[in-house]
Length: 92
Image (cartoon, rainbow, N blue to C red; front, side, top):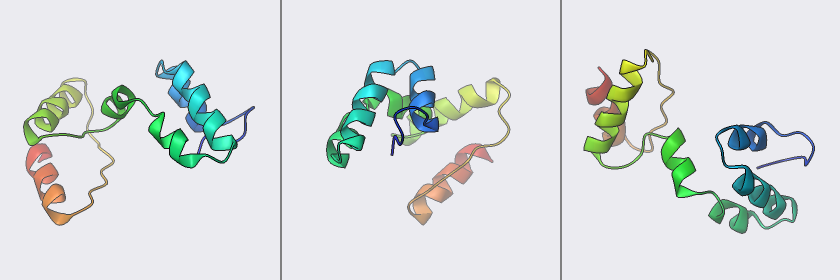
C-alpha cells in the first residue's frame, strides 16, 4: 500500500517517477480503506515504465534498451513457467 501519509517509500518513489497527482490519489484512497480505488488509480503509463510487460516483441525491445544502458541484472517475477522460459530466452 501507500502507507503513512508523512513518509512512505512507494509514494515517494511514485512521485519521483513524475506521478505526483496519482501518488496522492492512490494514497488517499488507500488510507480511506478503499484499496480497489487505489489500485484503479495507478496509471497504465506508470505500470509500463516500471515493468517489462506486454507482447514478447515489446518486452524484447525494452530489454535491449536496458542492456544498452548497461543494466546487467533484472529482478524477475514470472507467474508461470512459459513466461519464465520466454524471459530466459530474451535475456540469455
